Amino acid sequence: AQRVTQPEKLLSVFKGAPVELKCNYSYSGSPELFWYVQYSRQRLQLLLRHISRESIKGFTADLNKGETSFHLKKPFAQEEDSAMYYCALNDSGAGSYQLTFGKGTKLSVIP
Amino acid sequence: DSGVTQTPKHLITATGQRVTLRCSPRSGDLSVYWYQQSLDQGLQFLIQYYNGEERAKGNILERFSAQQFPDLHSELNLSSLELGDSALYFCASGPNSPLHFGNGTRLTVT
Image 1 (cartoon, each protein chain N blue to C red):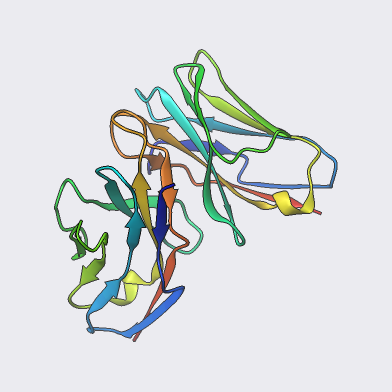
Image 2: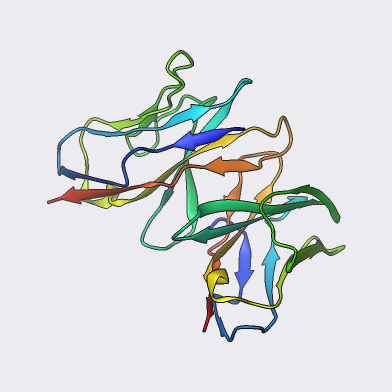
């Protein structure tokens, strides 16, 4: 069965420091991976999807199939980045998005 | 604004009761997905409807049911509520782009 692991429940960094939020997955096929962000009990917002390879709010993520990882990175953390971050995997095939989420990592950026 | 509307925002009810959560998808989206977010289990997929028909089931209890109406809005019915059902219930719509989530309904069972 597919699984998404985010090993850190909480990550604290100082403003201006680099950030890396880890995500590992187990999946037998070709995964489609996403990062979602949730600010202070608000709705989940799509941050990144691996197929688009774009940078949103300074965040990037690269799919590493060899290491089965999809870590989220940002070179310089900002206070407004403080939020819950969820890595998610879509294993349902084209046209359906039954996402399997990791448990999430709470990022706290210290001023 | 994601365009996905969920009502009510908050719901407080007692054990054994039944509640209905409502979701209106983004304009043009045919699929509605329901997710449960709890402290214990994290975010879990419950069920998906596509153009009025059930498409997929996840970790949805038998006490829970859902439907999607001709106007594409969806309702999630939770019955015989237990304390452990207290959670944030999210609706999301698709399917031709990554899911866009609503603001959720926070259910508190006392």
